[in-house]
Image (cartoon, rainbow, N blue to C red; front, side, top):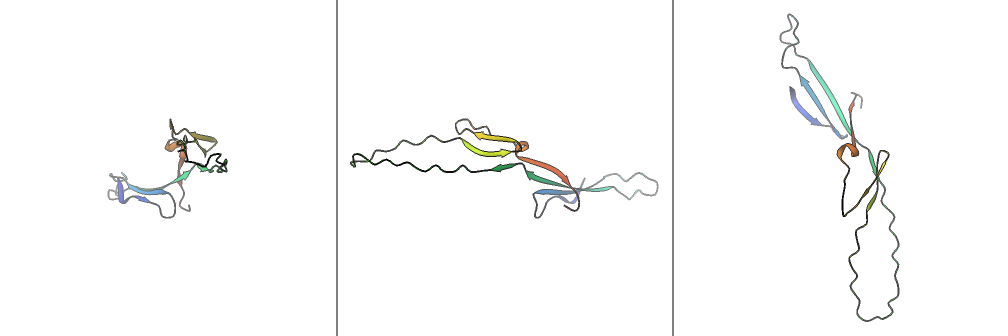
Length: 115
């Protein structure tokens, strides 16, 4: 069972710390009131980096007839690029978005006491 602290978010790091205690005693004669206790700390680390694409300079053409301006059509959304998770580059199509799952984005590992 979890002890009084339950599952506690870490301070200064992304992750959690837990302490558990056995419900039954350790089972040795004379130690009926003793219980085993264990603690663990899990760190959540990002696997991904994002590099924003460089904006392309707008090309402006002189208006040959400076009468009424025409409304420009809404530009099609561009695919999102620049997300790299581990060794995999992700391209997200706005029309059919397939997003990375949590396992693609993060690593969770047990940490030692000095971390």
